[in-house]
Length: 69
Image (cartoon, rainbow, N blue to C red):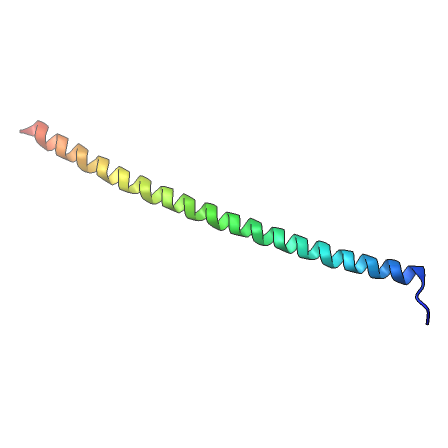
């Protein structure tokens, strides 16, 4: 059975859909990786802020003790 132009078009569309699907999958994976990275960066900033806040509270307590003497 000879291939008709319609069969060529259908095959080309199918291949294009596969390629686009793979590209979208890669973009999704890239975005997910970026979100994970941003989450990790946010968690690290939060950890640093908590440490700094704790240090500031200790300094305030120390100044209050010194002021009460």
